[in-house]
Length: 350
Image 1: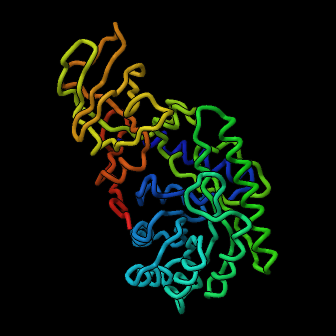
Image 2: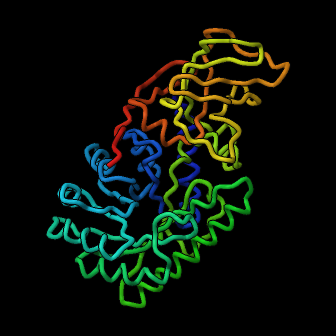
């Protein structure tokens, strides 16, 4: 269930924060995968959208999104090459690269497309996931340019910005600026016109500084989730999406069981959260057990629990997976379902 007023407030605040500080906003759509939310973001001023997969890009292109960045080092096999070429004929397309071989394959895949395909070199700012070190960006960028791609920038994901305190987010934001700046200079030194330095994530909101980075790609902020609440990047009033769960068992006064499990809430559980989701009606309760279709909630001693058959709201730990598991989002105002939004890119994982 989505609260559209909270959702719109989250979108508006991020848009205004980006605009006032001079950043281009290109939100990551993998968090919502929804045409109606994409439209809200674009109307609020987003330049385009970021996605994680070719199929997410295809789904959003079908509903009219015409400026897309696949912020991922795609490895184009024959089938993906054909799909990328079709996308490049239809929309303004950017794709991430992080290896010489990947850049060459991407160039081969989209050669002769109706529109030039832009490439951004991915650099590792501390997440230790994908991305080259800044000094290696030049080799990758040169290969991409030699393959016929328009190398316009660099990008990174400051995933190490997740943490209980603002210091971790501050450090991640500064790491991001340093690595993007160094990588961009490496590419400029070989004659490439680097215009886009793209970073940002929901946890590092508030730590960005105008200057080096000029494009931001936060995603979770549209809904927020239990992890963002736990690490302090949002308040309970900023939670825009919950799962509606029914109490199916009350085996003890301090325990009840809900009819949602990992196939609704997802199974993410980090060290920053105390259980498998947050319960707005029972903030001291903890989801201590999660199965495919069961969630067991433990309450502190003396806390009055819900009755059998009650409906309880649950905020997932990480919103991206639960949205991808749902066919539609129910838009709820004042306790009434006022609309149903399809999850446009539901299951678009390739």
